[in-house]
Length: 210
Image (cartoon, rainbow, N blue to C red; front, side):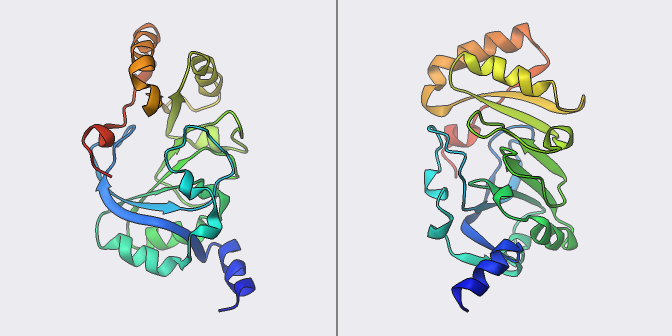
């Protein structure tokens, strides 16, 4: 297929730059400990310096893959499907989620909200970033707000975004992995003083699973 034709399908969400797909245990946030099939989509211009999947940033490094194949693979493993990135909302998620829902699969997304929300989601984890803040209605739609804490200023950043989510949205503070020994005690103290927040840990890294 000609490159232009492929890119038209990518723009429509019929094909996506697939970085990887794998079956594992959700390690973070509200659904931690749950078996889930992860679909990691390439492409992200948010540019977090502490990102642990920087290889996902350049979408051109990841082959455009027909969503029918992605959906077929996902349906073999789990009823909980997590779409992550990169930044998945770089692309139109409507065709992918429509296909997943047609298989009676639960659709979860992990997003910075830097692009408009597309797709049908059973669970939206919003993890806002300072370099490219959320847009549109994502705050009001989020089921989970997960703020990564790298230094003390991130607590004020977290509170700013907590003002805009719904009252049923679960609030999490998660230590950035490379400074976890430094910031985890700060997070523990903060949550004890502000119990509307919960502590999230990257348990998959402690368990040494993908």
